[in-house]
Length: 129
Image (tube, rainbow, N blue to C red; front, side, top):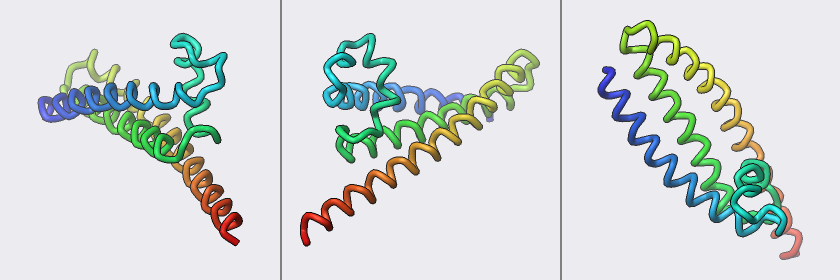
C-alpha cells in the first residue's frame, strides 16, 4: 500500500506542479500592473485567481488545481501513515491536518467560482434582455 500511495502522491505532485505553473502564468496576465512581476505575483496569485478580471476558464483551472493539491496531500498522508514507521507517522499526521485545511480551502474556492459563474450568467441574461 505504501508504494501505491507514494506513486499516487508522486503523480499528483507532478500534475499539481505543472497545472500550478500554467494557472499562475495565466492569472499573472490579469493581475494589476504592480503585481505582474514574479515576486509579487507569487503572493497575489491565490488572492486574485478568483477575482473579476480573471476569466472563468482560468478560474475553473485554478479550482481544479486546488482540488488536485488536496488529493496529492491526501495521498502523501496515506503513504506516510501506512508505512508504520514512527517518524513517518508524525509527518503523516501533519499532512492529514494539511489535507483537512486544503479540503476547506477547496470548498471555499468552489463556492466562489460558482458565485462568479452565476454572476456572469446573470450579466449575460441582463444584456440579452
